[in-house]
Image (cartoon, rainbow, N blue to C red; front, side, top):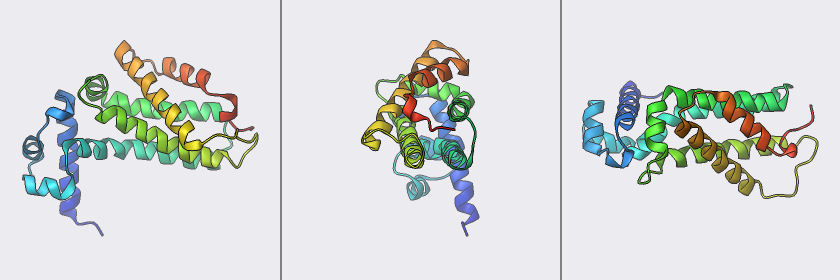
Amino acid sequence: MTDARIVRTRAALNRAIIDLATEKAVPSITVSELAAEAGINRVTFYKHFTTPAEALGAALSLDLDQARTRFVDGFASNGADPVEFLRASVSEVLDHIDRHRNLYELSIDSPQDGTVPNLLADHFTETLEQYLESRSRLQPPLPDVDRSIVARFFAHGLVGAIKAWLLSGSSDHDEVLRSVVALSPEWWFPEH
């Protein structure tokens, strides 16, 4: 059983880092500032994280990990149209980004801060690796490719698409979704 104090501290840190990262670039956030915003001391912060960037990754991953689980589990057990399933899954990530839009807009184009783009790329890479593992058991067969290279290649492409979308100022998910589907190879989708 998790100690209630740990749960409260993590929740306070999650709120504090998201609030601070919405106002300024992650590299300029100090541990002292983050601890004060969360209502804890530095020693307590270091019991949970080593850097503010790590704290931000943990906070944003709460949403993103749930989206991954729904995508991978849903794909494995769902007879839905795989293209529509991909669209719905990417749209869920875009919903997450919309909820934290100021944070993403500030950090995705910051030359001194790779925290958010790297977090998204790692999220998409892990998601796509799990997807390709499930997809490998279906027809048509996957081409003879290194799945980790393919997953990372598409993950960084998705981050680039999201960056372009954010920088354009658009809030229309369909612009991103049409492009992602159009750029996905046919073998990406199993027969249904």
